Length: 478
Image (cartoon, rainbow, N blue to C red; front, top):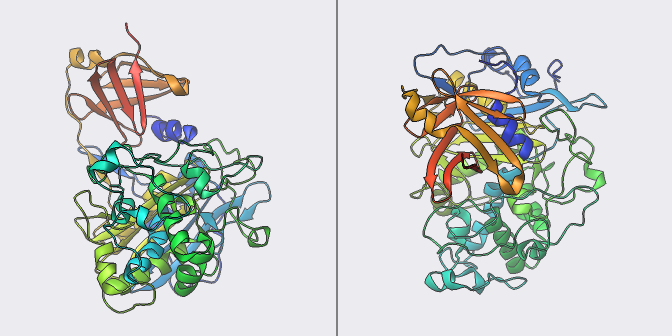
C-alpha cells in the first residue's frame, strides 16, 4: 500500500508544509491530545489494523498548508486552533481569525435568510417560487407542468434543477451577476428544471442561486447586504461576509487556496457570484456561532434569527436525510455539511438535540480527508454519536469476475483516461502514472484501499461504465 497522497482524492481534487500550531488567545482548554498526535482515518477495513497518524504528518502527506479548527461544547466554543500556513510564500500562519472560503457550507447559513421570509409569512415553503421572483424567473418546461419549483425543493435539493456546483472565476475573468449565472452567461450551464420537481434528490448549487435571487427580490436589497444585516451580525459572525469579490479592506487575514501539488489558485482564490451556494468567507469559530444559534432555536431558547417551529422543521430529515439547508446524519442526531471550492475544503457536524459541534476548514484541494479525519477524531474524543469512520468490508471475488472490468476507460469530454488491470486480490487502477489498489466489496463495487472511496462498474448500452465520485468513464471497446 502506498504512503503518498491517496489516489482518488488526488484524481478528484486535481480535476476540481506544516509548522508549529499558530497559537492565539482562545477559550480555556485545548484540543484532546489525539487531535494533534493520533488522527483516526475516514474509513476502516474490517479485519485490518487501524492506523493513526499525527496532524503534522497528515498535513505533510496530503500537501495541506493550513487548517483551522473550532469545537463547540455546552453551547460555547471550548477551543479553537490554527495549524500550518495561510500563505506559503509569505509564511503567514493560520490563526483562529484567518478567513477561509466556506464553499457549500455557505448553503445552510444562507438558508436562514430564506426561512426568515417564511417566518414572516412573505414566502410559503411549498408555493411556486415564481410567485416571488421578479429579477429572474424559473423558465417553464414540460417538467414544471407536472409540479412547481418550491422553496422547500430548493433547500432540500429536490427542485429538479441542474448545475450541481460552480468553479468560480479567476482574477482575469468577467464575473456575471446572479441572473447571468442562472441564464448560463457565465462559465456554467443555465440553471433549468431537468427533472420533475419533487421526484428525487439531485444536489443543485443552481437551486441555491435561485434561492439567493428570491431573497434579494423579496427584500429588495443585495444578498450580501441582507445576510450581513439579518443573519451574520445578529449571530456575532462579525468577520464573516458573503461579499463577492471580497473587498480589499477585508483581506487582512485571508487564507490562500492551493492545488494538491501546492500551487496556489491563480489570484489566491476564486470569486463566486453564486453567494448563497458558495460565497461565504468565514472561520470555524464563527461557523460554531451559527450552529449554536440553530441549536438554541431548535430547543426554544432563542428566537434571535429563527423561531423554534421553523428551526425544528429545518432540522427534520426528509426521505433523503436532508433538512432545509443542512444534511442530517447519525439517524437524525446531527446536522452537517461539507464545502469544496477551488483551493478550499471544509466540514462541520453539530448535535441537533444538544450543544456540541466540530468545525474544520482547510486551504487545499486535498484537504477533505484531513478535515473529515479531524472531525471524526474530535467526535471520538468526546464520545459523540458521530461523525465516525466508514467501514469497508472486502469480499472474495473470483479472477474471472474481476477480469470483466479490465480495460481502458475514458471520460471523453474531459480527456481523461484510466487503466484497469487485474491485481492479486482486486484491481489495479492507474491514472497519469499514479497507481492504486481496489478491493472488491461486491460483484461490481470496489473501494480504494488508501482512501476508502467507492468505485462502481455498470453495464450500460454504450458498454462498461466506471463511476468514481462524480466522474463517469466508459470502457474503450476491446
